[in-house]
Length: 196
Image 1 (cartoon, rainbow, N blue to C red):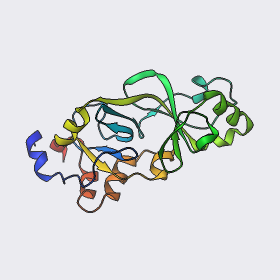
Image 2: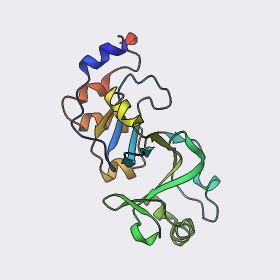
Image 3: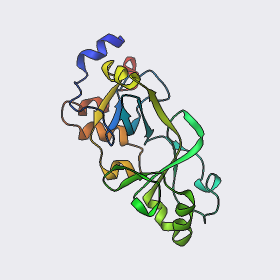
Image 4: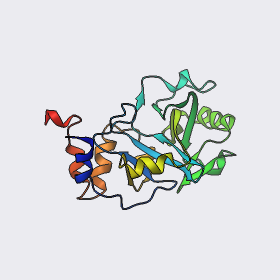
C-alpha cells in the first residue's frame, strides 16, 4: 500500500485541533517517534502548538528525576523530542500549584515545583493525580496544520481518564475505537500492511 493509497480509506477529521484535544497518529505514520501515538494538545494557535505524548512510557522512576519527595509509585512518559532533558507535569491540583495553566476541565499543566514536592511529601499517594513527562512535542507555526492536512493526525476529544490514566498501553487503539465506527477499524490495522 502506497502512502497515497492510505489516504483513500482514512476517515476525515470531524474535529478541529484545539487545546485539550488529542492528536491520534494515523496507522501507517512512518515517523518512528510518533508511530501509534496519542498526543494531548496543551496549546494550539497561529504561533504553533505543543503537547505531550500520553502513551510512551519511559523505563525510569520518577524519583530519579524529581528530588525531595518520598518514593512514588507512578510512571514517567516520553512527552516528545523537544527539551528531552526537562521534566513536565499535568495534574488535577488546580490552583493549589501557583502558576499552573488550565488545559481541560480540572487538568492543569505545571506550576510551582516546590509546592508539588510539598504535596507529594504530605501524601505520596497523591502522585496518582500527576502525570510526569520528559520532553514535549512541539510544532512551529503552520507545521501541525500541514501535518493534519497531510492526514498524519486524526483529532479526538479528550477525557480525564485518557489524559490522567496511568494504564496507557492500549490508549491509541482505544481512542480510535471511541472516535466512532468510521475510525474504529483503524485500531486493528497491522503496523506494516504487507504483513496483513
